[in-house]
Image 1: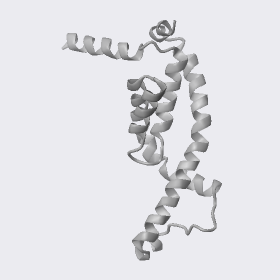
Image 2: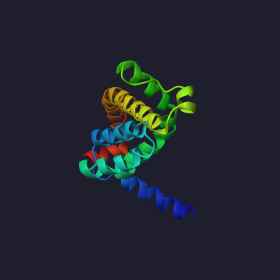
Image 3: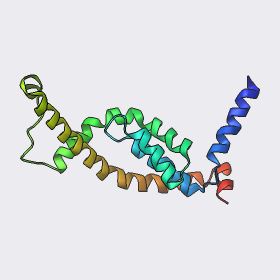
Image 4: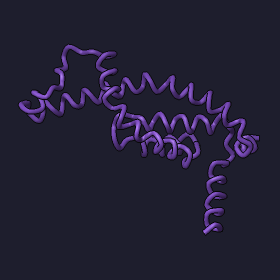
Length: 154
């Protein structure tokens, strides 16, 4: 069993050292974590994969950060909806209330939930952009102190 564990550890270290500098690995982790918090279920995993392939980022690292953020995705849905409603108020959208859920038509419910998703996504963008910048800066400083990662960046 220990031989198998040692082989897996070597494989993971190899994945993390795919010729990435500490700054690029920090950006990868920050993007994966931020995308993992998108308030729409089912979107983050394929989006992380596409982004990693398009920008030549470390795919295992971005998906690991994405999966680490998944509990936050569920917890942050309602705060993002509230923040989006506060930032981008619109007089034309009716509020989604319990009465609207019980007595409204399915089309009205779909329209209201689409508006809520739009507000949540806009709030996520407002929060995610500075969060990725801050996470990248702090993780770069941290990863430069990890010998295995610092060697890969040389």
